[in-house]
Amino acid sequence: MTIALTGAAGFIGRHILRIAAKRGHDVVAFSRDPERTVSGAIETRRFSLDEPPNLHGCDAVIHLAGEPIVGLWTRGKRRRILESRVRGTQRITEAIDGLSAKPEVLVNASGIGFYADGGDSELGEDAAPGSGFLAETVRAWEAAALGGKCERVVLLRTAVVLGKEGGALRLMAPLFRAGLGATIGSGQQWMSWIHVEDVARLALFAVEDSGVHGVVNTTAPWPVRHGDFVSTLARVLHRPSFFRVPGLLLRALHGGLAAELLESKRVVPAAALKAGFRFNFPELQPALRDLLA
View 1 (tube, rainbow, N blue to C red):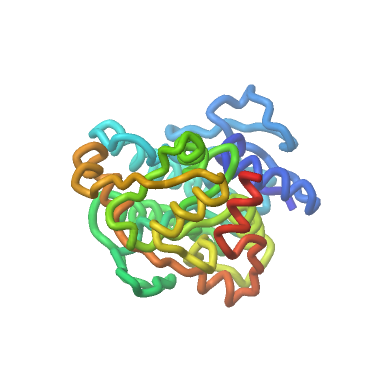
View 2 (view 1 turned 135 degrees about the vertical axis):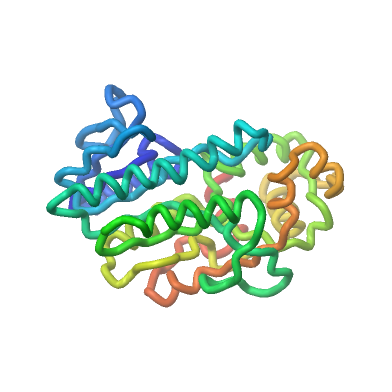
């Protein structure tokens, strides 16, 4: 199978490329710089927010490209987050609509920012949507993916991704190694997470299994409370974690992103488990040990 992959040179994209090659798939990488060589891809094509990409010859599309949400949510940052997701996805569906031989499936990145604060309740794919900038962005993002004429669309609502080369762990691990690990807010809020290897495997599972469609929560089966995440990470790194960042201070420093960190989202991968997907890292401590040993 020939798979089109946007964000191929990114944190998650590199893992998808490696696993796809092992499974015998050809990957066409898409990049803002088509002259860039992406290791593992059979070729690199241009991806831009200004025009539909060339998807000719592709049997499936995995669309990951988008502005990272980490950082201060200034007006410019919010605009880039929204436009990169919505306009980028619209360009993908425009390209698919223009093909006579269309890809069988579009696997589109999304996020658990869609959901409202659920307290201690488990949140499956049918849980209520939230409000605010990130929830509204995810709704518009998913609507763009569903607006095309692809036979099958899968929306990967992804949790906090843990990996060596990027994501939250790359930011957190140096602080914890320095003994500066801290609990945010009360620490009682639920935190959904997933090992990057399982993200990549689940994206390819969605491509390969024709029975998978619609929303798929891309989270490990066992969410943890934030305080337990902090203590587990500190234990794996053999470091203390005494500090606590008050919620009010975090909101003052980081604005809208702080609200996401303080909300409780006990998101579970009901659709993936029902479809028969098996997680390599369902529990937090083995996942962290694999990444940080």
